[in-house]
Amino acid sequence: MGVLNVDALIEQAVTGLGFELVVVERSPRGRLIRVFIDIERGVTVDDCVMVSNQLTRLFEVENVDYDRLEVSSPGLDRPLIKPADFERFAGREIRLRTALPVGEQRNFTGVLQGLREGAVVVDTDQGELVVPFDELDRARLVPKF
Image 1 (spheres, rainbow, N blue to C red):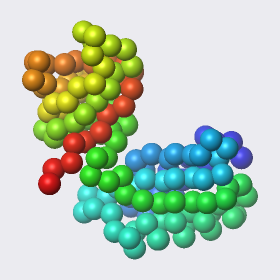
Image 2: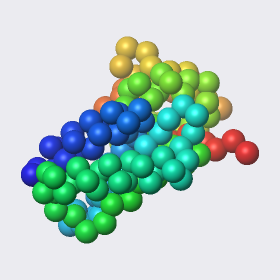
Image 3: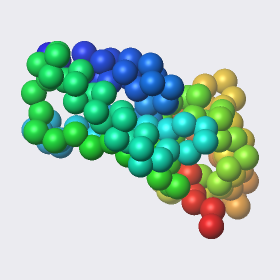
């Protein structure tokens, strides 16, 4: 079964249980599958166990070849991956890295303003930063303690 089919299976199972699939990561040879889930109220250990058990059964039925499965919450420094993430977390402080330098800089921190015409808008100390979504390398929430 191809990687895309497994990802679709995982997403269907996770959303079917009422969770959001944040991201699926794999080890270089695909022997470890790491699944990050989220839910508005916050992810509990019991949630991770339930999703893990469901995926384990599903992988057996679908003959998914892997050695280890890990299910966890995305953490306080949750990665922002889908365009919807950048809308949902508007008003929060984020750290982002651009694929190409913007004014000789690739790393920025600021308050996420959301999306505007397919671009991520961040209010930084240097002013407003507008980065086309497909020119982002990565973005994460900055944890608040």
